[in-house]
Image (tube, rainbow, N blue to C red):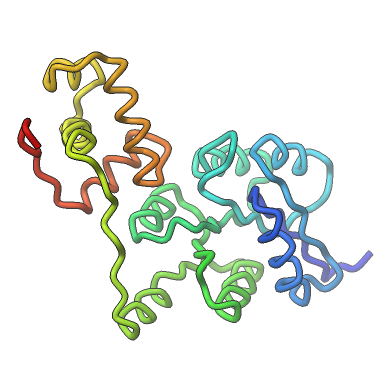
Length: 217
């Protein structure tokens, strides 16, 4: 048994990314391995199978779970093992959400490979690693701007009501809609914003400086 071996659990449903990450990170593992799970159920099963893991990399969007919610469950399964978000959701709000959930790190899938390897190495050493300083510097250097999510006026009205703390029933009354229609609009809003819960939608909405569109918009 190699006492220096390090095992990583990668929870992500993209097979090509799994293979690429395995090849990229293998030199860090000293004979350990990357075990891949495509969904929350598989991740829990992998942790319960008895293998010792030294790091969990977790996508925010999974077929059967919200990544931050799953992180809470995984921490109960393997207390003390670092759990970091590894996501294509690249807006600053998602790093904020990760910090509020006490994730050990955040790695963007758009990171330069060398920076990604350095981040994983840092996490394996027991330290936290958030890539926003790297990303901020790269954005300033390249003059990047993030595109604003494209919400329809109806979706913006629903989101504005949501940000006021209204329930679905109250939103329906405010906008003269059925509750079913409100739920449909909320589903569309979540998809456009790349979130899975009301609280996440509110946090993202707060970054957009929204105002209630007129009824005829």
